[in-house]
Length: 300
Image 1 (spheres, helix red, strand yellow):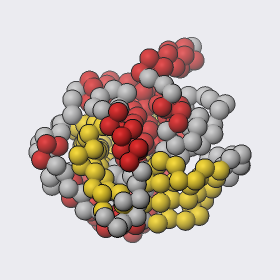
Image 2: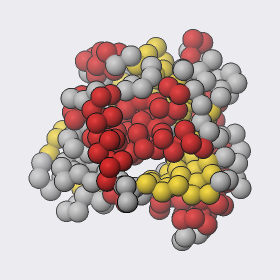
Image 3: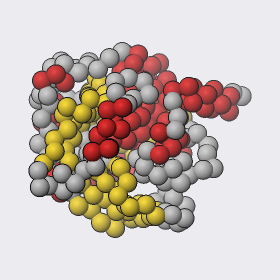
C-alpha cells in the first residue's frame, strides 16, 4: 500500500569515539525511506541543493523509492549536520547545523502522490508538516515525528497538528517536555488527549513504548555489541514500523505491536555502521532471521 514520507535529506559529518566520517548520506526522510523499503514502495518528498550527489538519488530509486517529490534547488546547498557522539554513544553534541535549502522548505506533494494511504510526517517544523496534510487526499493513517526544538519554539503549531494525526513518534525526553510529566505512562496518556490515537515513545538503547487506549506495550531494544553510529536509528525505527503497517494495509493494535518489533529490528542494524552502510548489506530475510532470535530472547 502507498506510503508517503516528507522530511529532510542531508549530508552528515559524524564523529564517534572511534571514527570520523564526513559528508555521508543522512536526513530523516532518507533513513525512513530506506528502512521502509524492506516492506513496501515509498514516495519521498524533500529538498536538496545542487551539491547533492546524484548517486544518492539513484541508490534510493534502486530501493523502489519514488523521488518525484524531491526538489533540487539550483544554486542552493543541501541541509548539513555535524555531530559528535560521547563515550557511551547515548548522548551527542551538535557541532554545526546548516539548514540551507531545508530552512525554507515548502513541501510540494506531486499529484501522483496525493492518494497515498499511509503518510509519515518526518521531523520538520509543524507548519511544514501541516502543509503536507493539506495536499493529501483521505489518507488511512497519518503519523508524525517531532523534536524538542518544535516543542519549545512552536508548541501551539504542534498542538494544532496533533489534532489531525493518528499517531505521534517522539523520544522519552520529548514526551516529558511536551506534557510536563516525568512518568512516561502519564505522559503517553496525556498525549492521547491531544488528538493521536496512539503514541510511540523511543527510548534508545532501552527500547520503545507503544501506548493506545488499550494501554501500554513495551519492547526492549535488540541487544547488539556492534554499535558504531546511532545516527538515524529513530528514523529507521519509524521507517520499519510504517513500512510494515503499509505492507499489511492496517494499523489495528496487534499490527501496531508487530510493526514496532520490525522497527526495533531495523534500527538494530542501522546502528552497526555509519549512514546506511549496514542496511545496504541486508534484505528482508535478514530482518526475519534477527526477529526470530529476538523472539527467542523474550520467551520465559
